[in-house]
Image (cartoon, rainbow, N blue to C red; front, side, top):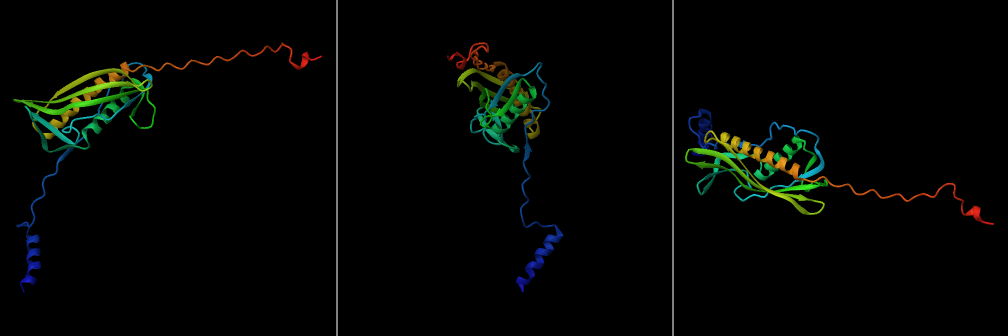
Length: 225
């Protein structure tokens, strides 16, 4: 008889809504993305070159989708806040988008995408995090970049880029907005630097066409006796 009463009791509990037999699910994490936003087009015509952009290398703390929070020497990840992809992937997409919208070069492609490029941007994201110092909060990104001539496999130039953006509160939304702003500023600097430093390929010399014999010279057959 007790066995028969169990289904009835469960149904009554479910209908009453007063008692929950299961724990409440945790609140979902807020997911944030990176977008270049409005990008001012560079003046003049773009260089007749193709740039490629590699996926940046990054330390393990930055290589995932977590939003990194640094306080002194301690590193933590924001609770219930994350990117909608890994940070290196999103940063690569942002830089490609900004170079394309700036229009300083003929085209920009992803490294390894099957399109032949003239120069390649290779970069290392050394820092991409929220930094808390006392009551001050700011987003910081530090990048070491190299520009490689893909025709000669030589280093054209290397540069270090840093960008910072203030964060208004300790919320995930404010932290993500500050980090996107810092990433955008750094990407604009890298885009302009790469377009300026990348050389325009020298076209190969045109092969000389040998002189043709004059039409008024006697043909070989006409010289026979």
